[in-house]
Length: 240
Image (tube, rainbow, N blue to C red; front, side, top):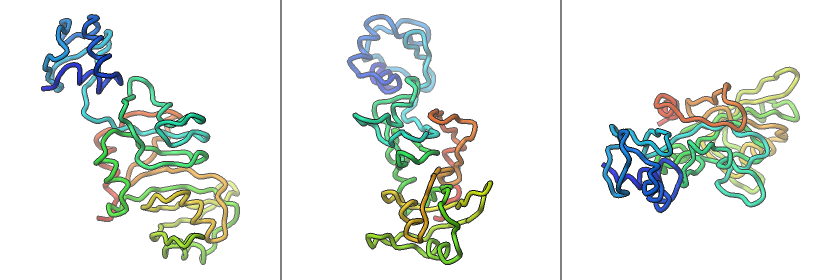
């Protein structure tokens, strides 16, 4: 059982004070009857709660997949640029959302956004070995020597040693491309890794995190909730 005002604040992206005002104004019903007290205890599993005529499903946490477009920064707040969190529709938004890993402003693709810190840590910690998969469009072909260096753990220009990557090089409509899987999240890591082996990244997209692939039906700039199977898929292909 939880307090009604707390549940509304959590799920409707409003403050506790605003939640209490909504109840006072008669905008909240529980099982079809007007709610009378902010401190009323409700069962989030069975009670039907509506705010301004809209019923919501109560959740302790929310887990979102976003197809990040180019030009959007991976942040919760930025005074200059539009952020990934700015793109989340009101019905999915919460005050405590944060990103599980970042993508550069000009990098596109899969972002996971949640308010579950433990879940995010499990994804991001290199110790959990959840690989992030990127498709890089390259300026030049990638030779065997470069692939071997990346797979052995390339050293960046500042002396930082990266963990071994998984690399597949291919061409697509005349473009040089590679699939790169890494389990770290250093600053500009993919671009710096490929620069360290004498190449340049002209475009970059993250297409998977663990076994979770980007939903290609999800338009750029859009997001949706993850299913339970998709959440589990993130950890299905890790290496212990």
